Image (cartoon, rainbow, N blue to C red; front, side, top):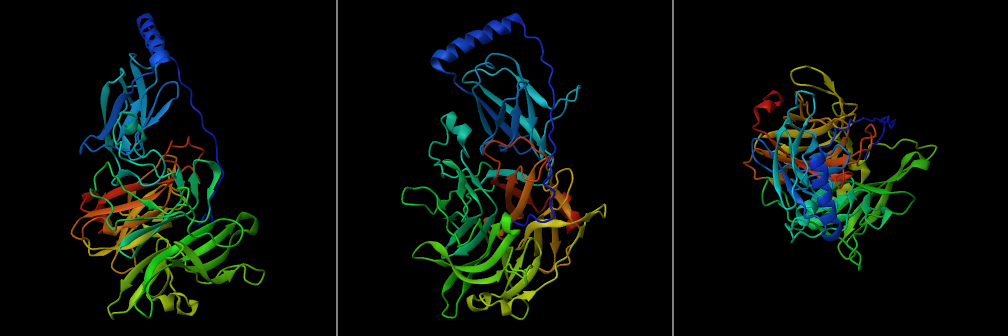
Length: 478
């Protein structure tokens, strides 16, 4: 991930709450529940949060009590509320969710009040205010953790991964290949810094509606713990980039990637290299170093960096374009051409776009492009650099006739109040060619935000969204 030019300064925020008096009857009832809880435990109350229009479950909605206990819906839009002090007592929950809201009351509070009961059920409707709709997490622990507390989703298995940074995808040998950056494991603060990896079906979702169940087959150690698949020599983490499958001269399929070595003490990325997947070891092996930082070579030349996209032009020439989001280079789409930097052709990407309707300048920070069969145009989803209200959490959509642009009017499809959502990646093949549905994901993280409370389970993980390209609000981008 490119962190250049980002202001990491954080300012703490706080808020105060006034406590309301509690009637004597409720105090006695609560005490009774506390007595039961201490001896037998409390059966959770099921809370389900759904979209007020579609009825779909909504993941990543937070319910916060007046004594600052936080609950967050899982991929099924479910919370297992099990606090003994709330049972049998009318309870107010603030409701928070980027892209979703409930109407504020006369005092300006946005929430919901009800009385939780052991074994009870409560349904809460929220309104989707964004164009993109949340489908749920792809990575991390407890994707259905709240549902499982209630005895549901018993067949869902945990991956052993708690956090995953930015994704690279490629089709390889009939499967979809996944490579993530730095990866958090439950056993120790230092996890995997040589890229975790997994495979899945080429079209891994059986439905494009929540709750999504994207099953990943991780590469693991003998003890079953997820392991690195791109751990290259040198200090600091290894970050993969431009992962793609290319044919060699004999017609064999070769999975390749670029990689960078990062070390803050060395001023950031100090080495770029190329690597090839080895089917025997199920790891990437370094092929060659293409740039090493030195006093004479302080800045890299045109570099194989970003998301790889294949395209065959009008002359029948197959290319690989690299960009984040817009292409900065291309090379012929063969294994032999890819490994020789002399075949890399530098491109000049569009620096800014204009917001549809307002004409505001929008500067892309990170993202991806893809050909869309339904629109019959190139599409992009990207995060704005220095956006508002979130510095690195404002997500936009735009279109172009060719992969190099020019890109037309940009439409904001997702906003965050105070959270980051960076390095979005498109999944154009998750839906059928005649479908207007476009799926994308990105890293949900408190990094670069103004010290928000970290979202339990979701922070530093990949969150999946759905964008319906037939939504009339996207017309200005057409």
